[in-house]
Length: 62
Image (cartoon, rainbow, N blue to C red; front, top):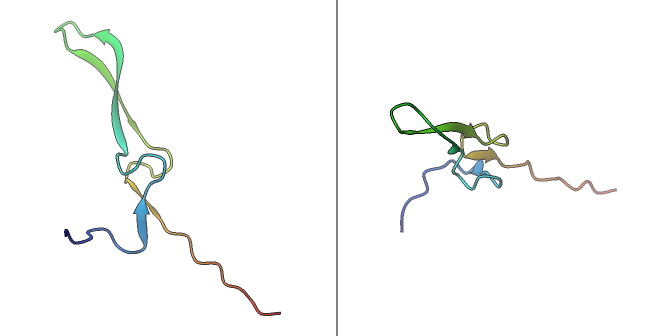
């Protein structure tokens, strides 16, 4: 079993599942023949791949 490397206060981003940066092809090619791509980061985690855990809601006795 591998040790946990992330702090207990963080979790994987639910929108990108820990893959925060992707390259999307535009369908066009550069003069050298390589494909033109755009690099896009996840809006939820801003490219970190993790989000902070929410604080547990405390119940107050009435």
